[in-house]
Image (cartoon, rainbow, N blue to C red; front, side):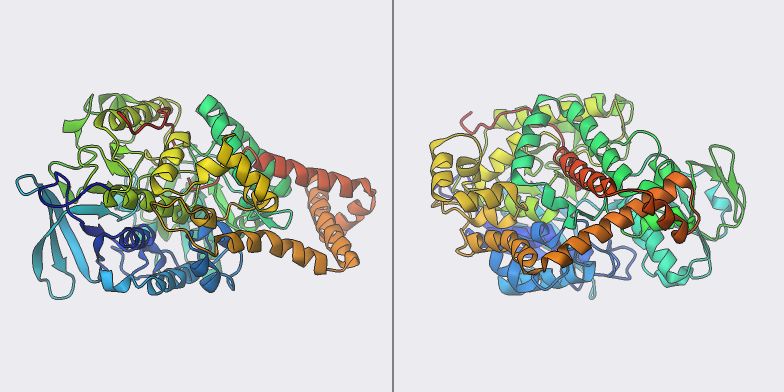
Length: 635
């Protein structure tokens, strides 16, 4: 192991983590696990970041009723003890309040509280080259006391939701009501009886419409410029992300490496196919018309209430906004207008901001780029407010890889919990000295490759996140190798270790490759270095895969058959209402009676098409950009 500290040419082990949301807590836990001394600074009075509900408009927070888009089996961290102790009793898709409780339990479980200072705002970070340290300036949020602290290393874990994206609307000063960003939307009840225009239809926009309806808003209007990427929460009775198996993920990574744009197009077509069969009554609706953008340009999202809101007409849909013409009048680009708007809520996302890092070290500083970001600025769909951050595999500073990391900019097809658990395992291995740092040449090549892809992608459409990575093969391989998970050696490719694991563990291998992509796999193998394995990892994987089988076996056959037939009949009834224009449920039932048993087979065939489509589909988050650089550490 490499020596660290004074006189070694390497920084010491005193690490400052800024922020204690999901990424910050994962960083603290994994860094401490590998022997680093960590102090985390959190500006609020509570940990949990976005998942702790706050009425403070300066703090991004989800409403307590918000449901996550990813199932509990795939959204948690990789430690099975925590996963099953605190998430087992949650529904498949936990609420924001439950996720907040889970994060508190996580911090308690691993005794992270003693490493955290609450009510401490970081005002700036700057590099002291003479002493080889980072100066972190802080202010106590209650007393106002200011302080300067020295740290050997810094982890920016403030996330990607930093600065509001507020579009410039002509004449907005004429508007008499509230015109706010979704960040300021804290209490839906205050809009009861009001007419509200929601701008933007992504995950936040859909949830906002749902909350407003539940709170008793009078009229709901929606401004959306493109087709939405809504997907069903469940398919065939299973959470949608359970179809995104490790095998499907591996196949998708190979496909994307061949052609990211073609794969993105196929994913968009798959989303459209799923929508067509899942929401038949909305075919032809403005929100479901036109081409579907793939995940490179629009992240798929889930909202249970949106289809009924659109189908019932409770939400009236308009196109892009031209401007505000009066105290309550909004004009749209097609010439239509609304004259009774009481409030406007802009659900237009955020920019990832690193302005806390002053001077040298800021990954978005043009001084350390090859072209001063000129090609990026000239790209057809570039937003001048979106900064490109030169980070190795999306997390490591190019200029100071041994002492500066940024968490929140990297986005892939995997949930934030899983991605950053793996990323912080890798970071801990690097900074503890158990794995070598990449060479300057290797870092530059990887970052340049990603930058070039972003520039090309922006010629075809606007990207939500410039840190999005579609071709994740290089990043995924580097993170696993650095963290020491053993996943690549035993589950990817045709090496001896993979063959041996398959031969000795046929059932477990099948669960891992064909079942839900359970995060515990990253703690399954003991590689003798890097992150620690967990004895309960195998049991966690088996539990997630075997529980549905046991439930199905316990259900009487007639009950199972009846449930399937009821589901088929409901789907067929919806089809009949759409195809024949039936106004009532009874009319639809009459139409259903004309359909023979073949309808059941067709419905099952439709389900199979959904499943097949999911094999080509990227999940949200979730959002992934191209890296064509092969993994290298020896340059």
